[in-house]
Image (tube, rainbow, N blue to C red; front, side, top):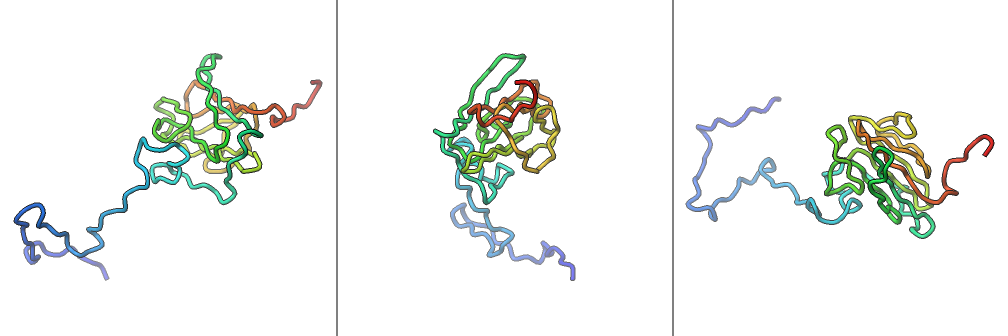
Length: 183
């Protein structure tokens, strides 16, 4: 049972006498979509995570760790120089990408996706990284699998796309990876 488009010659079309007199046909195909809760540029990246513009949904275990106990931050480096330090403590999710309206850390590079990576937290303080991109993400020089959570630890180095900038996930030293050897 295939549907065909109605014949325009047989349709009853009434021209409105003015813009205010026009009424759309009573049909779902002409229904207007619901307006988003926030518009671009309003709120912050955390608020915009639920917006359709961000291709990410928070998992059920998502939670914001206590900012005092887990003072997390991201340092953006280029050629060994710290360009910016971004405080991300107290957030449940952090976005890295090109979109200045909805990302906490903005990397302006053509091979960085608008929403390249999400750093997702648990209330207990654990951090995970989730690659949303088409151009790939590396942590400590290891390629992440796309759309799979990977554990992130203090001191980890994040590379997004083909950008020369490095992002260092920072926080309390006791939350860094243990080092084997003669330290």
